[in-house]
Image (cartoon, rainbow, N blue to C red; front, side):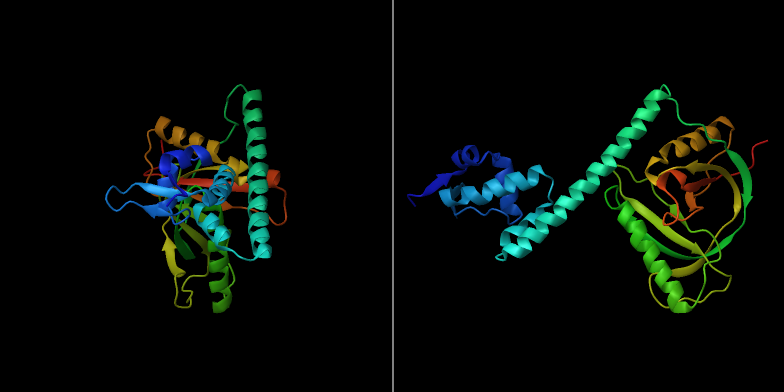
Length: 274
C-alpha cells in the first residue's frame, strides 16, 4: 500500500488527464493497482508510469486504442516491432494523402476559390442489371470498404463464371461525412438473368430514368466539387433529386495515373428540365 499513488498525482506524473486515465481503465489499457471499494478512488503504482507513457506517446501518433491494447499485451519484441511498423506505414499513407489534399487546396486558391469547371448534362439512364453488395461505412473506412466490396463482387462473378457487362459503379444510399456513416452499394453490371452463388452479393436491377450527369477528371478524393456543381444545377433548374447518386468508374486505376482517372457522377432526377 505504501507504493500506491492517487489518481490525481499519477495524472501529473504520467501527463495524462484524470479523464484519460478513467477511459484507459474502462478500455483495459491501464487498470489501477487498487480501487477503494468505499469511494471508488483509483490508485496506481510507480511502475505503471512506464506503460502510461507508452500509451500517451502511441495515442499522440493516433494509434487506435485496440491496437495499443494488443501491443502492450505482446511479450514478443518481434511482433511488437511489426505492429509499430504497420502503424508507421499507416501514418506515411496518411501524410501522402494530406499532402495531396494540400496541393488540391493550393489549386483552389490559385483559382480564387472557384470550383473547377464541370459541364452538367441530362440524359436518360437505362435500367442496369447488376451484381451488388451493400456495405455500411464511415469516412475513415469508405475507401477500404469500396476496395473490399469490389473484391467480393468480382469473386462472386468468378464463382458464377460471369463476365462484367459494363463499367463498375458505386451507389451512395446515404451521405457519408466526418459526422455520419451510411450505406454504399458496390455494383458491377451483368447480363440480364444472371444467377449468382448464395451470399451477400445479389443480383438485381438498378432502375433507369433521367439523370443529371458530369464527369470528374482526377483523383477520386477530389470529386466533391462535382457533387456541388450537380446539386446546384438541379436546384437552379427546378428539378429534384429522385434517388441515390452514383459514381461510375470509366477507366481503371491500375492502368492510368490518378490525374487521368475519369469518374461520371450521376444524380437521378424527377424529370428532364424544360
